[in-house]
Image (tube, rainbow, N blue to C red; front, side):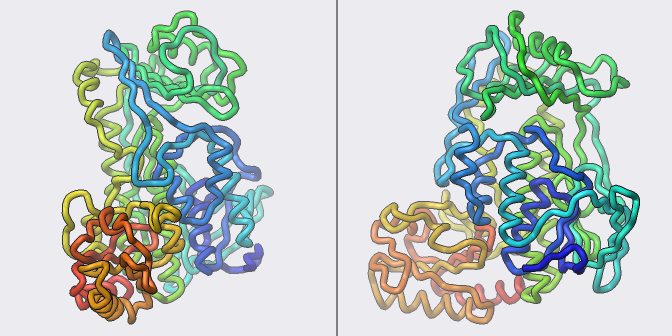
Amino acid sequence: MSTAADTDPEVLVVGAGPVGLCTAIELTRRGVRVRVVDRRTEPRQGTRACTVWQRTLEVFDLMGLPVGDYLDSGVAYTHRTHHFADLPPLVRPADQTGTPYPRPLLIGQSQTEAMLTRHLAGLGVRVERGLTAVAVEQGPARVTVRLADADGSVRTVRAGWVVGAQGPHSTVRDEIGAGWEKKPCPGTQLLQIDARWTGSLPGDPAHCHLFLSEAGSLGTAPLPDGRHRFYAGVADPDPARTGDPDVAEVLDAVRRVSGGSDLDFHDGRFNWRVRLYNAVAGTYRVGRCLLAGDSAHTVMPVTAQGMNTGVQDAFNLGWKLAAVVQGRASARLLDSYEAERRPIALALAERNQRTYWGGAGPVPPFELLHSRLTDAGAGHTGLPLAYQDSPLSAGTAPAAGAPGPGSRVPDVAAQGGTDRLFGLLGQGDWTLLAFPEDSADPAAADIAVKEATAGARRAGVPVHLVTAAGRDSLPDASGTLRTALGAEDGALLLVRPDGYVAFRGGVHDGAALDRHLAMVLA
């Protein structure tokens, strides 16, 4: 597919970080003509967002990325050990069930970007570097973007749509007037370094650790090159001080929080100082321009959610924008992007603001935090995320534990464990799963197929019949899929291209399914 520099694309993606690259991949693999520009003349180096949660790994797999090689390049995140002042440490395993990627991955962001860039190039799209978007003007059918080159010259691109993925300092966001309200976290700062270390720190160095003391918070994580990431949230004695900290300043903060007075750093790099804040754009879409990732929301980098949340933005937006560009859905489908993704960012920002401890303000009740961790869920992994209130979610609620409208479909083992559900369904398209009321009865299977086909034919959605015998269907002799999806009494499950349930009903609800598809893909 040609995306030469002098071609006006169907979509212009501004920003070539993980979010911009994922957006471009999702669009390109669906046949959309894309250009990607970035203001940097070379990829930014550094580990930055180094935690890749389980759902992000699933997303990469669903995008067709080489996840196996990617995993081999990183370090498995196996455990998180919490250390509270004057309390015993609490060790929690990171493993989660219902996914082929039970553990998070620790890997530098530059490696993530390199993997995404290679894959995008394999699809025929190369990042155009040294181009900064300086002006955006919308028309009824096109968006005109002025790009400034490194030498000061300006060129013009006319695109059908524009996705701003530039990071917090987004000219696209500013140009379209999307709004940007920052909520700072005063009195504290985050000091960070990647370094080798010697001295006394409790716990297994292969684990991730979080220390909380009256002096502030400290997180540590092992990195693929043998260094460890240290990030300390401590009081900020001089908010006017600018520039990144030296090793001595970071080391002093780490010693104070951890109590490791004999700790020392060697071979440190990527020292970093951050004055913390949260911000969410007032809207994610203005006309033909959309925002994703840190251009849409910037959250404090203390829970390792920023890049992961941005990747899910891109995954959510990509299939929707492709459907609109190619005339398979109206622009109304894009309203669901903000409806689904902006509440996620708002909730994350609120939680960070409420729970972050960085040595400023009243000292948190550590005993209460310690006790609550025992019952903490897996929300940080991205796996429980759901869109129950989305305009794309409809139908009936299932029994407890089964995926209902708006929920993620678990990637469970199928065909006796030799394959997984996502692999059997394909990557990135609508799918309808039809479960007969009796998985071994051919007559019941015929009824399920008739209802499913009546509901899906007009929209061109493929139907997968799931039966015990596997007659022209997905075989489920052991009932694994039926049980995992809560379809023991039969069901119709419409699965979105991003793996969430769009509609759930009984085997006789084909008409309701047809009405929902007509609304979604109108």
